[in-house]
Length: 398
Image (cartoon, rainbow, N blue to C red; front, side, top):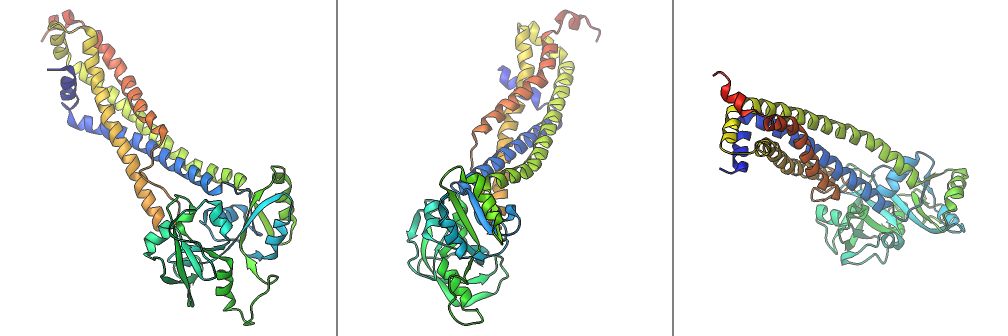
């Protein structure tokens, strides 16, 4: 019988103990894999959605809320600002680009964003079908919106007032789908994008005066700025905050704050995983040490049949390594499975894009971690097996 097969039989000679050790190792490795996959996707998603956005300008309020509403569309905006603010910011010599956003409506929970063609160009959006709008009341759907709602080119839909599922519908004016974007794993996937004039037209129909509003009376929600020079990072936020009713949100600062808050939760989960792994290593150590003592006569027989001491020690180590290999496979499967479940839950809330199919280069460390723990747990039992004295065992009273 080969040494590997013998180690496998020894491992499962006590199935409950082996199963418990396997469970502890798998849970610990799975938790670490889950933290890696989710945190990496969140960070990369943030970097992707914030690329090229140096400042977000909104109504007075929380800068964090402004960033979440304007960049990630995960919160309600702090209010509206005058449309003339856009022209003022575009005239600033330190501003290279200013992209407006008008929020407030949705369709089946997906947000409708009134903007300009610059917003699509900013994300280098590609169309899977159709094209961009050429007039008011025409809409471009993100890939996730199209898949969830079932809307296709040429079909019409009504917007709901508000950013939730319970808002009243604007049934008197319908949007026409003119384009569907290709999936990009960015914030565009869960948005409906239209022209600013579409949002104004919808809400001006409810205006008490009954006449078309002038540019001085019109409002937008947010403005995304790109600086012309790094020096603007010093002066522009101050200048914006000094204006009546305006609030600046610097994505770099707010993202760092957000990641610190998220990092506290990941640290707790990572610590829990390490506790599980240490408990598993201790359990494997105890099990192997007990097994060496219980199998002394078997190991002595192997020595009498000509097996060198290192081969007996290797037999004990192979038990731990076999356990680590199985735990690695189960842990990776568990980590990707939990990530996929989280992705489904977030997709149901039109939130962040998380995929269980994501592969992280850091996952290569998980088998090494399992291997290291297995060898650490097996070191002392293997040493005990290596130092077995066959003469003493044969002379010991039965």
